[in-house]
Image 1 (tube, rainbow, N blue to C red):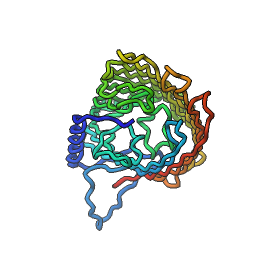
Image 2: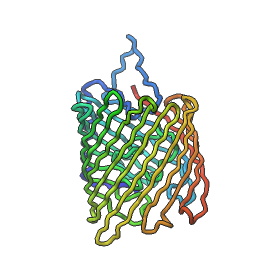
Image 3: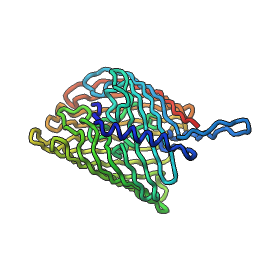
Image 4: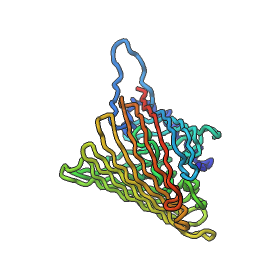
Length: 378
């Protein structure tokens, strides 16, 4: 479902963009968070003949094309999506200004953001996020603006970094994707292990759950939440062993309440990685609506055959509405490969098995393909 944004947030977003453009008084810093894994930084050529002035902002992004089976699963059709994202960032002392602009030719699958231009049936151009972050120290930072709810997939969803062509079923289906507000966050590391935390509050900006059977009236719901990730020491048995928990509570505009809980896992040892998320949402009763829950999970193992070649699989399930579980239970299994001949280029191919109504309808099969190019303007 497309997100509904009010005039107030639009004006604030445009003002924040102007701040970003005026922040060019100092030299740009690199955007490492949005860079695909394994990509090499490009040092600008130097020499007396080169007099190119540095840009006032860090500019990076990616161009992507995908061919996918329809996400509503019952439709059994496919669609092609072309998209491009631009990341603008600027560091001034302890302040980091950052924004992301996305253009998408399949706007019905793009659920968050502020429309910068009137949406058409074939194109959506949105400011997906815009924020300012003050870094007092690594363990204590304050961020404000238009932010993503810090589920694992929302934080790492970029086509230039993900190994899969499609997103998990639970993405945009249990947790709201974005909110307007503020977040306190930080990281603390010891000799081995550490913790990362996020505490946030504000107004959710998602109109409804994707594939919602009954409208939940999420627009402008007041929300608070928090997330804790433990970087567990393993005496070098694992390269990464992270376990996280996330809680989110909201009072919706129709007076119903939403209570959401999530768990995430990220394990990496040598060429093997396992990602997983579980999400449970209790959609509370309003005077005109009975309470129900939405629940799902995915497990995604991957294996790096060689530095540029990965094999990835995913097993996932989702219950969109517990009031009619037989109709709204769905599942999907995927197996694919990702090839990066150069760090900036990703070629993806996957085969999918869909269960649109698990146990009631016959499963069917599909293919997904993607081409992604990451760029950075020095």
